[in-house]
Amino acid sequence: MKSFEKADVVICGAGSAGVAAAYYLAKSGINNVLIIDKNPPLSQTSAKSGENYRNWWPNNTMAHFMDRSIDLMQDLARATDNAFNMEQRGYLYITRKPAHELQSYIDHYSQLDVGGIRVHDDGKVRGAEHYAHPASRGYEGDLDGADLLADSQIIQKSFPHLSANIETAVHARRAGSISAQQLGMYLLEEARKLGVRLLVGDVTDVEVDNQGVYAVEIVIDGTQHRIQTRSFINAAGPFSPEIASLLGVELPVFSVLQQKIAIQDIHGVIPREAPFTIIMDEQYLDWDEQEKADLGSDTELQWLLKKFPGGLHIKPEGGKDSPWIKLGWAINRVAEDPVWEPEMTPEFPEIVLRGAAKFIPGLRPYLEKLPKPVVRYAGYYTKTKENMPIIGPMGVDGAYMLGALSGFGTMASCAAGELVAAWIAGNDLPGYARELSLERYDSTTSTETSTGLNHNGEL
Image (cartoon, one colour):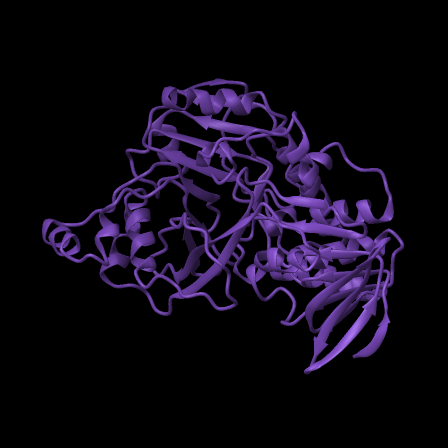
């Protein structure tokens, strides 16, 4: 075994979170930071990002955490002339249900620190003078809260590409899109300027002594090396439980494979200024009678007749001149052991397009002739049961967890990196720090969330 070198902090994982942690550690004055990953940076889950952000979360811990991340991203956008294309167009939640059926949802969010809720119905407005859907707020957008559109005519006037039977829409305002790769690469390049190093290697062991973490063992080109350190960050994404086991720590996380597609919107169905749109309703896919009979007789395809969950989402992809749109749907609820190149569901493009076409009729021609190529993405939502991250001490002195970032790793990466850096550097911790650490599982005041999509932040 070769003795390689020393580092103040070793980070296992060069995804969005690991790179952000290195950046904020370096900004805090800890420059001897080493990132280790056996694959190129930002190439696993980070490469499959939906590339969105929002502060619209169902508890104040997550709302405050995401507000901080958005603040940090806005600061970076100002400093870089918006190098990662941050745009505040909002999140648009749509449903066929009348507004009164969403009353508990609205009441819940009205009690949170996400901004006010402005109600628009029958031409009357409560909480705002008018509703305006801006083409783009840029990264300096100052709107927060949400606009509740409780009138189908208002919805049709603002979003004519949607089905006329959409009765209610919630336009969360402090939300929008970013380029995950460009943000991540900017943070990595800036971290390197401050002395952070990136090493291609495979972490095989983390050694501890009576003071905690002592060294990290890695394999580089078949040769084993030891890196001495007293601080180790587990930012291995879906592979974080495997890394935690090297320290004898069992993490309360699981991974679920989720998929997205991108196609060229050759008919211009989705306006380029459209917000990220989420269909709240559960639904059955539309099949004709013969298709239903065929699917029902095929034991491997009968699942296509089941009710699918809410959460199907769609957005314009790229700039104003881009023809691309991206669609995703977290239809999978089964936890599995992650692999680097997961198998994708062959039927997924048709599933997501069938579901989307029920709410956006202009997409129906794509069911007859799907534009080529179809770009497919598959990545893992590595999560806790309450869909909140784990950031902070792992229970072994010098070892820190930075993970369980589920489907929100890109939008959370800046605040997550800043938070783990604060734990290591001994800086003041924000009010949400304890609730986002493993300590919450020992606390009688731990944040309680439902398993419903609306209540755990998956919508």
